[in-house]
Length: 119
Image 1 (cartoon, rainbow, N blue to C red):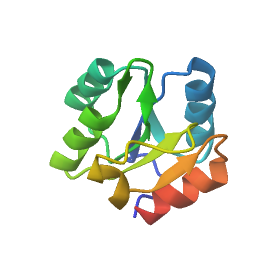
Image 2 (image 1 turned 90 degrees about the vertical axis):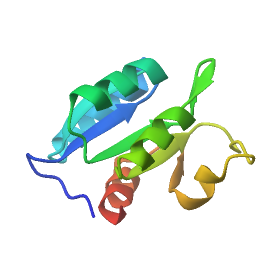
Image 3 (image 1 turned 90 degrees about the horizontal axis):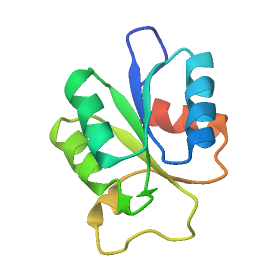
């Protein structure tokens, strides 16, 4: 379970600039320390390499790429995360989606808070 306090750092991966900033602001108001938002796989992996994160919120689609490599890295590091998406469905050929919480956009901060607390 991830609860907000000064030692809990959450990574945000979101390619929509304003959505990422709003999510960052909302999570900081809840007491989380936020890294990001990162808008690409490369930037997100760099943030993981340089910051101790205890959880993450990953947008599934990042322009011309997806967040699966980030999810795989977080799984490897035993860092819990949730997915968010604006699409009706996600890639059914990757089993990572079947075991993770998926929130649909527009997301509400109470839903994100609950999902993070449930991790």
